[in-house]
Image 1 (tube, one colour):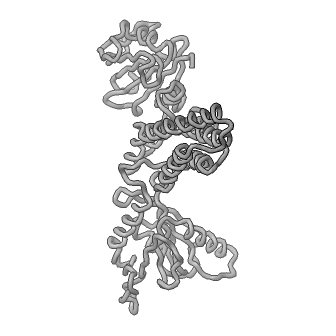
Image 2 (tube, rainbow, N blue to C red; image 1 turned 30 degrees about the horizontal axis):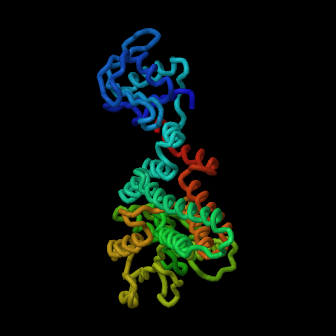
Image 3 (cartoon, rainbow, N blue to C red; image 1 turned 120 degrees about the vertical axis):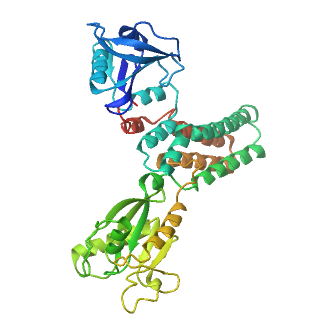
Length: 425
């Protein structure tokens, strides 16, 4: 990180204002080369920007200076708030590229430097990546909670308790070698912390919020599944015919219902078949039913698969003989647009039950795996009767927390994570 990087950190021009960031040992020198004297740290000033080689006037911009380590990256940082025309931005970037020792930043490199310099931990970096990709209000709030250090602060509390338990265990090894009895308060502390971690693992995960709640529409052939998919999505996404077995593979339609991200999934009709291709579709449909966050069943209620979040639909309710729906089923006609709005409400309500609360911090798969590792180690520690084994289990738990925050053993994660960031972030 001895080189100095620069990039456009705002949206692509044209725009009213464009922000160009420079970070590294030569950031301030680069600013002086373009703008002359820089303002005091954390103070903005208007300066003329001139090409260092030709002294040609490029723009009149707002210049800000940040001194290490109290900057976003932990390095010396300089920001240029220029007019947002393409020619202006290209001219300033070209001038920066002409300064020896400066190079264009790669995607996510500013945030990577913030992580490497201890300005943020891995959970906050993951929150920033999610914030950039957020498309719904719920996604934004969950990502912001991570990015602002909500999980980091909670982990710090766990680590303080864990370090105290480890110190108590090490003292017992040093001074109580002949005493095989472990202090009950030490065992109780391990059990209580393990229990708290288990409670966090039982919370709804962030993946349904990020990827969308999988709402699977299933039922027998010709039940009206594809027609319902089209009616709910408001466009012709699935092929509809009166020929049984038309849908051979599943179709996913991304939707936002009341701000809840949904992956509406059409499936092959469930029936016994000798058609090899259709049989594959049926097998996939059965698997998707098991994986569904919410199951919308079109078919006889007594034939509905067991599922904790199931919505029964009486489809084709406009046809003769189907005017009366079974008890507990919602009457719907995709063709007549009957009951569609009424169906969206329970889908939204049921989908929300698998999402984290808007004010709660949700774990992703990577984070949950390390919390699980720590909880398992603490659980073993709380049941052991050997001081040495107890101390080793506590060391394993500390290692899991270090991997959770990015302090150790996460090199394989970092490139993939920071590659998700846009240029200049």
